[in-house]
Amino acid sequence: MYHKGAIENAPLQTYVSALVFSPTESLIRSLFQHEAPPWLTIKPTMMDEWGACLQTLEGHSGTVLSVAFSHDSTRIASASDDRTVKIWDASSGKHLQTLEGHSDWVMSVAFSHDSTRIASASVDRTVKIWDASSGKHLQTLEGHSNLVLSVAFSHDSTRIASASNDRTVKIWDASSGKHLQTVQVDRPLYDLSFDSTGHCLHTEIGAIVVGDPTTPNWTTAVTEPPPPQHQCTALGSDDRWITYDSKRVLWLPSEYRPSSSAVSGRIIGIGVGSGKVWICSVNLQ
Image (cartoon, rainbow, N blue to C red; front, side):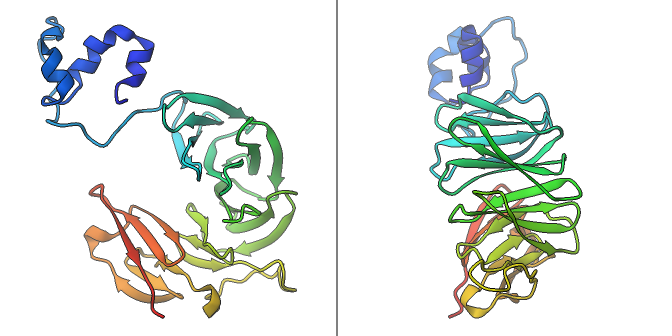
């Protein structure tokens, strides 16, 4: 799997690149060392055993800015400054299709939780919705006055949130594309996700409450802490604290502070600079 790309494109590299760049104590290296190319007199220093990387997906002509798994774990979407979104088979790494339509960099990509649609956010100030199976463009959401930095589906796949450099977060109906709500924030947001209730958005500056479409105040932007029935676990704006219901509950030592994070209800996963991921569950009731 690690050498899949090289072997598919140039099969003879099975005995050259794949052998040279395999770990020193790997089975392939020990069995076929005699096949190593004699003309390569200074070889790269390799680790003893295989690492965690299974394969590398190549095909974009520019920098990859965002990547997302489908929620059924069968596909991967990647967004790039080459203005495209590419869909890959998560098991084989095969390139399935390329979604084209944005006129500028694609900053963020997300699958709906039912894995049927893909949303992409772009510097061209739009969010585009695509059919995840056919790659067909379904609709374009317009309304932001600056580049769109992040996009997310609600857990029931009925709404989409988009965050923009215009310092707003917009909520959209995922089926009709209708704009439902705008929340003003004090800075651009790059990390956006709904909690399981659909009432709370997790961001790098903390939790934001969004309206409930069944209540009369749906169009009212709210940035106050959520009521008890919609309590949220989140990271503080300085990444030093885990908060619950907007109250500081756990201070993080420097080696446990996030380079990236994800929140689901009361559980928070934190990726740190050492390459490790740790998980914390907060339940104060």
